[in-house]
Length: 416
Image 1 (cartoon, rainbow, N blue to C red):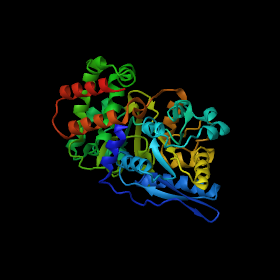
Image 2 (cartoon, rainbow, N blue to C red):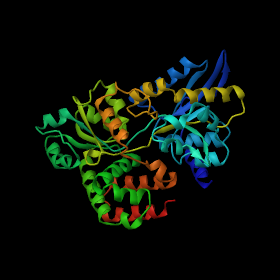
Image 3 (cartoon, rainbow, N blue to C red):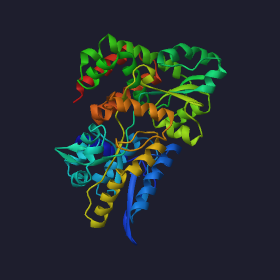
Image 4 (cartoon, rainbow, N blue to C red):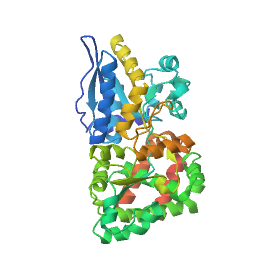
């Protein structure tokens, strides 16, 4: 469990905001729920989860929001669990992030509840539930499907520059210099490795193609990672780095706001950006455009969020945990939460007819089965962190595409 020790050391300099221990209250239990959903759109979405939980049970949702990204929050969450101060429930990404906690016997087994409610009958794709499963037992409740391969475009930015809105990444590349000449930021990009890694992955799928992407990300093929397909990827990312010069913001939602306010032409970001557009009163297809797969490959990865329930002794808390897990998977919660979040539901049997134009694109791709496993499933947290560190170094400096490709291929070769 060396990774957990590293995480503990990293967490000492970070403060958890709003941590409140769960306690018995009249008629129910106060259940502390930790998460890192703190942007405007995210806060609106998580409030729907709290509303559904309190409306359908006698319990109280005690919000334990942690400011910052998942990279900031996860060390805090994990250190509390292994340090004997567990919360009632916590957001993590479904995949490998909780594997060591499960192996250490620190997470609650949800298998009986999942079988009783038939989760495997309605979770779509079933790989989402597989990502919550270890040694045949289910340890989390997946709540959404998030995909990272989206290009978000400001219609007003392009119209003010006298340009047509691009239909794909190649057209964006052609128009980027003209946006710069018009005094606009071509590509909005937050200065964090995970955002830059996300952009790299999206560009890789578009430029290298699905076969090469699978060879590298699923099969861990270092020859392909060093081959011509990925050479083209790194050259494209080097171009994107130039388009992002001058995007002096830190957080992803600040970069999204540059598109919302029409000061930037585009952003590569996951579908959670839709929550920010919604809070700003923007309408898909009128104020902004969205291109899944960067308009080059109509595929989506199946990343997303899940809730895990740390093992506790208090029987009342245990009962509240099961009630929250059940609520998260209910049709009503799935619709309410995902409409606000901009993500897709994990249930394949709910009515999403009121979803906006961008969500409908995602639902169509999901329905066609054009999906890929996410990075949280493909790579361990340690390898992902090293890739993000490489991306941060590359985007912030002048590292050559060839040097970056070699370092990336080396990391792929070290992956499990």
